Image (cartoon, rainbow, N blue to C red; front, side, top):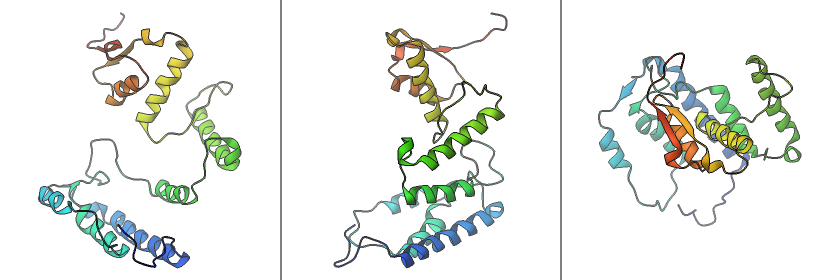
Length: 210
């Protein structure tokens, strides 16, 4: 998308406030009507997908129009995982508190990879990890960790940590055992950790006492 001649790529404070307000109204209306929305709506989905195919746009689309199209046309088809009638799969209902926190986080864009870059934010993360560990009953002397974006990333970090602690050298001899019910992210994490595919074993049956 090419900016119009003379247009600034920076948003003014008023434009930012207006965009946030427009998005907030649409989100609030969506959440407020979840109990009346269908749990799934697949009819016409293929036609919608074909209709959404388009070349690189030459002109910008006004933000209000984009939001109206998103909530009115693009979001409804498919599975409504936040619906009270949806009882499967992982995503579930979104957490508004978390979404607001993400808005703040992505807007200020602070780097929290090292303490010096954002000491206050890093300490807050440490507090949350400590609280979760305390709830889980983990020993204070050895507990620790990082917050991740989800279970898949957590599985990868866990496997890399185990590899580093248990196989400082010759980790290619390590074997990963998974049950058939294990989440697919575990096998993917093992491959990303450098475990050869023939060293990933699927346990077909478990017998008590053996």
